[in-house]
Structures are given as structure tokens and as C-alpha cells.
Image (cartoon, rainbow, N blue to C red; front, top):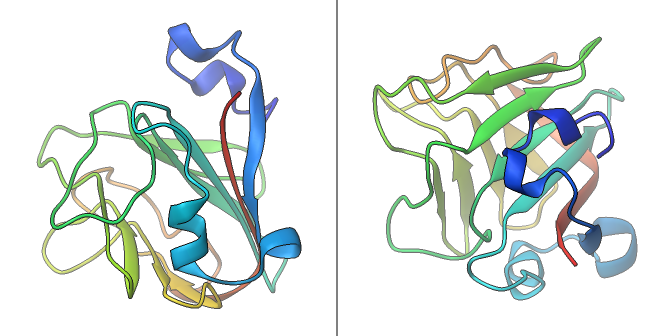
Length: 155
């Protein structure tokens, strides 16, 4: 979280963040992640470590929630710590920021590809280059197994 601070929108840089959800504490469940969300107007930071010890994730200016379509703002971005911090910001090509239902959470999209996706049991996910962020694959492989996942929100 400290390394990502300078990448966040300026209005959030001095705000206190707290852990809303952790697979280590709360188990592996997308439904539980949604229930753990903060206020609807509160931003969320997803941090993921895969089983190959790669760290990456997504920032959403709005709460991560179940939805019937894409939502979010151009402040949304993807990031990777492989090997140093790389941030992938909105390209302006589409507004496929965040979309989630009980089976799948997606961040970024276009042409059938998602910048980041997570399945319902939060054990598997994937990352592909997408039009929303013009990102690289966030992990070493396009599909990965999740070791740890945390969601942080404003206190």
C-alpha cells in the first residue's frame, strides 16, 4: 500500500486505509469479498499474490461490488510488482472498468479479454492485455492460482 500511495488520486494520498477482506482471515469467497466492501462511494484496492509469488492488483475509485454491468471511473488502474511497480492507467478507448457477479470479477476489458479476472472461489484468476488499460499480463502466466488476496478500503 505505501508503494502505491503516490499512484492514487491526490485526494486519497493522505487517507488512512484499512483491511476490509483477506483470504487468510475471511476465506476464499467472492461473495464474502463483496459483503466486506466499504461504503459504495469508497475506493478499493485489490492486492493479489499468486502461487508463483508474483504480486499485482487493481485500484477502483468505487467499491468492489456485484453489478449487472461495468461501472467505475477513469481513475481505475491495474498494477504489477513484477519485478518493480508498473501502473497501467485508463487509455480512454472504452469504459470497461469493473464488473462483478457471483461467478466472476473482471477489471478492464475489450475484445473478449480482461485485464484481470477472478473466479467465484478466488482460487483462480487471469490477466491479459486489454483495451481499457493497454496493460501487460500482470502475472507470469495468463492464468494463475491465487495464494493470498486482500481488499483495502478507506477507514
